[in-house]
Length: 248
Ligand SMILES: Nc1ncnc2c1ncn2[C@@H]1O[C@H](COP(=O)(O)OP(=O)(O)OP(=O)(O)O)[C@@H](O)[C@H]1O
Ligand SMILES: [Mg+2]
Image 1 (cartoon, rainbow, N blue to C red):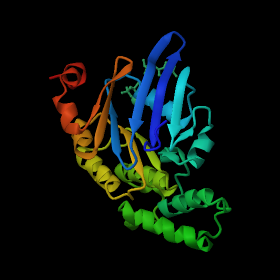
Image 2: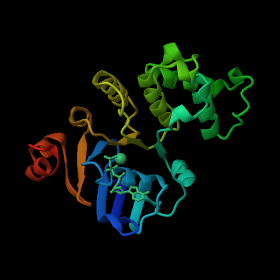
Image 3: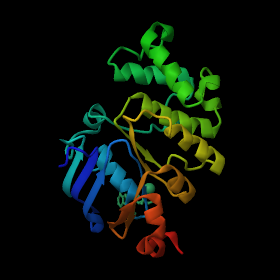
Image 4: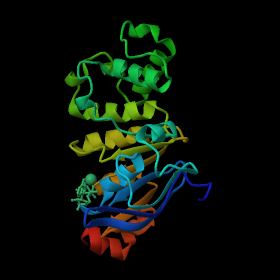
């Protein structure tokens, strides 16, 4: 394991019964990168995310986060080690407002009692920080609206804001712009460019406009293996990728 990497996998294999999704996957990501994983439907992108978050267990191989072997760590241990993924907030307290949802997430991060909501204003430091995060993601004007009344695009941005509030060293986003218009997708990714350098972002995305604009590096998963890794320009020019995936 190289110390200079934020995330590394070696020989990662995954099968569902007789279906081998991939075998021997070697992946590396440097700190500070915004790294996209692309590939056709069914290539194994979400399976890869599941192995990183600990929702799935690999059939073989090792995963390191910040130099720490997390292959057998529970999802909660991985969060403590610096990994965060988006919450599906539609299923989470739809009557809470973004400010309350963020204060709760921050209280949980700081191990202070936050689940009693009365009154949220007493959580001084968390309240200030929640307001900073809302401002960073352009959500200040909607801070006190019930989350269910936010536009769909704003809800997706809030999901990312909640994950970012945990101050992860690695933020994992599986199709964060799914269901958004092109403009909303770009707005969401613009926010990711303003995050602190200490946050690396690994995202799965089908919209190549977003991938080529916002990724520093791109990995291409196809037919059970990583067929290419490089800058957006390198990936665009890669013959194998063009024929296997980009379709031209
Ligand atoms: N829990 C599961 N049980 C059985 N097979 C599964 C399971 N999850 C995924 N698969 C299969 O594994 C393969 C990879 O699926 P995965 O969802 O990781 O692909 P993906 O690259 O995320 O696709 P998409 O672009 O459609 O989101 C597919 O053939 C899928 O049917
Ligand atoms: Mg998927």
